[in-house]
Image (cartoon, rainbow, N blue to C red; front, side):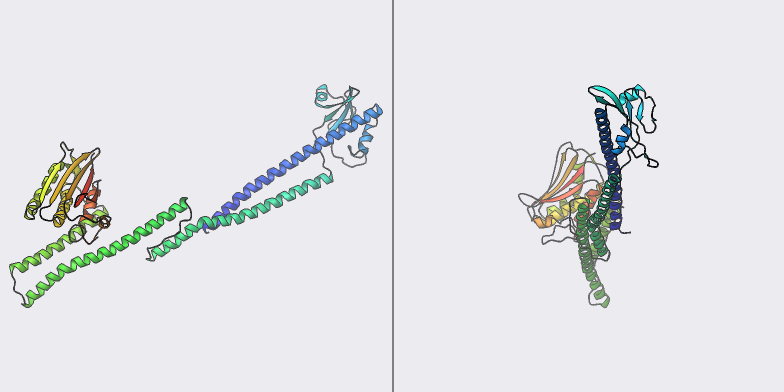
Length: 445
């Protein structure tokens, strides 16, 4: 059964229960209040008739005939007359007009007299009207009136149920419309059409679900495009060294070229490039699957920076670039994988060397803040444009002045994965004066 019909049925059942209970309550209350009204009216008529008869005749003799003539008592010839709710007792507490459970001539107790309605004449109590507790028998006209009210009540209840059914169907369709749209869009995505968007029609939970779906669709589309771009870039990076190596091997094999140490060196360099690319892909795959092994140990930040700088100091001197280190005093040790962090910082230094001109400067820094350690790699190079900053950590992203790391374009993506696996984060920013700056935040336990 569809959700729309389930919701409609649920609304209908709730409406039936509510309207049915309300109708039964109203019907009972109307009957109760109408009986109370009739009883009060008949009691008043009975008392007035008895008092009027006594004032005219100065006696209760023949009062029962008078009451029958005024239809306050059933005729004598009526078979199985209904019990009457009132009896009349004279001043001596003797029943003179009876109805079950009282009988004529019975003497009533004073306690029952005190609960009755006194009949007075010239300021003197001459009798008492006592309620028997018997239900009042409705006249045909009164019963017809109640039947008409009940009929109108149940017609209104049926109309309310019909309206509830229609409204329930409309509300159910309105509530399930976003779900139907979401289902349709999901089927489209299952067919490979990832770029789907459904309208956000409300700000409730269904609206939040629609927004989340649209965001997921946009992210999947973006990731799919990035995957395709990454695949194309990797294929290009693989094709170039393979073409070089293949060309040299064919020429050497055909005897068109002579084998020389220089040509073997070129082929070796291209093979190393392939090895680096394969290693980058393997590391990213391990990071994505959570299988990249980390060996955490207490590390002094200053020693970490000095160890990495020593590996690149010679290259910096050759390029006539100053490689400096600045650290705060009394830095806390942090639990890191030293080999992985040296790889991250080394990647950043390598980038800086590539894009910093002769006479420039690369500054490695370490500063401690409450709860975190900030490692920085800043240079005075060509800088990074704002549009590239937004995508610089994406895999295989290449800008006009690409600062994406190694030639594979995966260096900064690998650096980001390694830092985040150790509970930190990394960001890039443009320096106010010149060049760029990368900041790595590591939590201090």
